[in-house]
Length: 205
Image 1: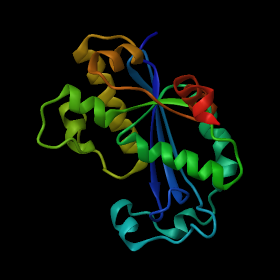
Image 2: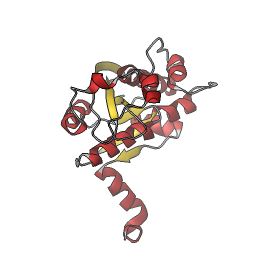
Image 3: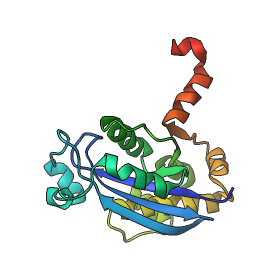
Image 4: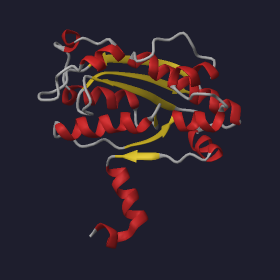
């Protein structure tokens, strides 16, 4: 398999993972960025309050999301863009938590995804004072982007993984995970099945 994946980044209106207010996605094929997409999301009540601290971070105002579709209406577009790829995010636990929490809140099935964390990969690839996204992206040769813009962050994340694969001399995501010693995560039914296989039926009783 070539270096194919989709990098993803969410911004939230407040501290709730249900409050996604924007998403950015960057598609990588054969180790190159081939497509980017992003949009605003209208957080659902009662998770729709825009916290002042969050606004300071990402600059998104409530009125920018007022006419956007809510999560349940946008999830099919997210899935269509990702095409079943491995997802990549910087501090991926947060972004995967958004997908799980937002989907569950609106009554949608949590989609199946395997994922890798570019923060973990960066720590195994570079020797840096900080592994924050702007610093790690600069080490990968991608700089000058607007941090906390979801689309820009997704592309920065993508470039970290592309550069890491090149530096480690690997040509697919499974090989990259193996060589740097980072485990894949999973959400959705595939994650449930993996837990069942690991812990056995007694642990699930």
